Length: 252
Image 1 (cartoon, rainbow, N blue to C red):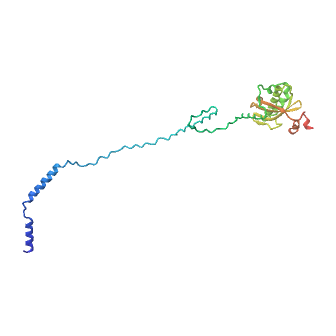
Image 2 (image 1 turned 90 degrees about the horizontal axis):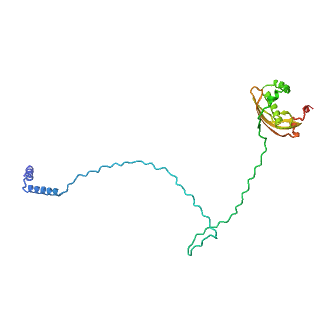
């Protein structure tokens, strides 16, 4: 048989009907149906939903200082006479004995030596220069003041007030001359006169004087005066500061 005839015979052989094949197919289908009937219901698996979690940012609480308890006070050791003997068999911790200290009395504070200084200024409660210039006996003084002006006139008015205050505050004195710049230059600021190193003469002796004087803007009268009288000036200082016992001695 040639090749085409053989291939045709093979096709017929494969396409021949087998009567056992439907029965086998029915048996398999029955077995599969029985197996499916006894299988449990299988539900499709689903992924569980994601649960959202609320997150809250909590800032840490502020640090608080932890109080430190003070150290426990040590109780003073008991004296030997007051000590209680322990019971037999009890062991008590030994306390160190402190040496007795003698408490010395504190030395009294030494008083600081008083520093001597110039006496404080005393405020005058009454002014006298205007009354003195108004007297008929002061005509020459009024004429002299009329030739002066400004700070020089104010200085002479204050000198006159200083002599009058000394005369009334020190009974028995006879002040007749005042040198406002004897020991230290005076300070003149407009209507204010400050004398820290002045000197006045009384009964042929010289004494220290300090004063503060205020004059009215017109330069006619003293409005305020405060002064302090010091000690007598030693005679060995007179020549150095051009102080004389009587008028005219400086020209000799």
